[in-house]
Length: 463
Ligand code: FAD
Ligand code: NAI
Image (cartoon, rainbow, N blue to C red; front, side, top):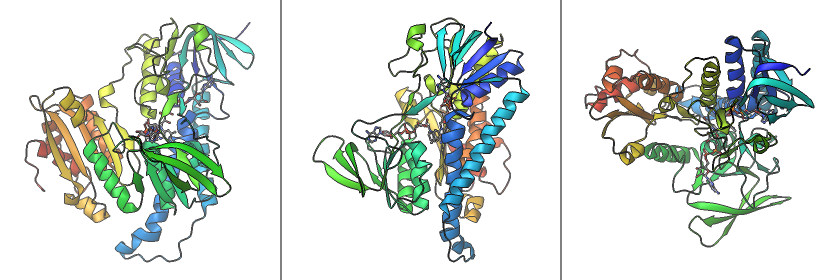
């Protein structure tokens, strides 16, 4: 007799492992299938966690080499031990993935090791065994999108996975794609000494985010030494003994130019991963972009099969996948699981950081919603001055009639942490007046958020 479960979750990334744990907490007998040798998915193994480890290490390196002199701390002869830096990153990842294994044991979630294939609703095959289950949740995530003419070998032409593993600092790193991965990992290698050129198809960086913030980020990263080729497309790449030669053309068409690189990072987006899952045979419908189609309760068109995370529509973010994992587990337990898509923050961990939640000005204009904007620069914040990080600003958007907070867009020191206050405000339906009248400790960076809320009504104090 095959072992049977209440729920089999396929994929142990932030969507899948969180869903499995929440379902077990709610009393279900749960298995989670993962084909990778460790739990935690893209995020813990080759995404959020290793990239943030390297961002921190490279920031420490740059700060020690160049940043401390302004504070009167003179450090000479700073050298890089990249092997040690990479080993530390490995230790950080290892501690995190083992943590998930511990949580599975604690919550009695069975890890089925191997690749899962859905044989039919209620039947999943893993490593030659068939398991029965009342419900299946697909949480198979995403992988990096390919580009015709640019063959990834994860050595000279790499995706984010290879870019996290480079054994030496490239002299010239060319990044294809001025999005989140390109700018975060481009920052890592620039700080460690690489010349970095970012080739972006559009006329701006980080599409989808506030355009004023995108311009500031381009200016600040440019000042740090990153080079940008906007409105440009890569049409081919040839790998040779002495590096890679890229063929680059204006996006609108025109004469091609050759650009040489030691390493090329391809980062033009990610696509849903459903390979070998047996979705076509099981009759699970996909949308026009290959994502598993779901309704508002994460149900696919096949009864008993649900999907969450990067493999369905919406932002490809770990916390979005986690919240969907909790919501679907609660729905399966008969509760009212729910995700508020208007309050999902997005953070880019460059320095300065970029953070956003809710609507952009462009989106509000397009939707014909009248809004007021309040802005406050970090140059007028006492703590930012004390730290020595005055680049950037906080912008809060509120409904012109009701004053309800509709969005916030920030660039500056630690804004990835500051954004949580506005996510909470949106979640609670707060007004900009509510944020403005909340007492904020002094001197903190958070005071820039309060002042931006005050600025919505033109009554900021320190500007
Ligand atoms: P995944 O994490 O992709 O997990 C899916 C898992 O399913 C994988 O482990 C895969 O092996 C497994 N799987 C697939 N098919 C099968 C099968 N048939 N059988 C068994 N197992 C299977 N997001 C953030 O919010 N913040 C960040 O800072 C951030 N940084 C990132 C940095 C990088 C370099 C990258 C690439 C991504 C980053 N992301 C970040 C995005 C984040 O990693 C994803 O949004 C998140 O991992 C999605 O979670 P998921 O559970 O949907 O899928
Ligand atoms: P992205 O969607 O953020 O950016 C891709 C960029 O490539 C865009 O600017 C796009 O215009 C450009 N582009 C597309 N085709 C191109 C071409 N042919 N030539 C040149 N440019 C081209 O995708 P990215 O950076 O690969 O990241 C994938 C996803 O991973 C992100 O969207 C995000 O969801 C997730 N992620 C999140 C992080 C975070 O939360 N801090 C960090 C890293 C990844």
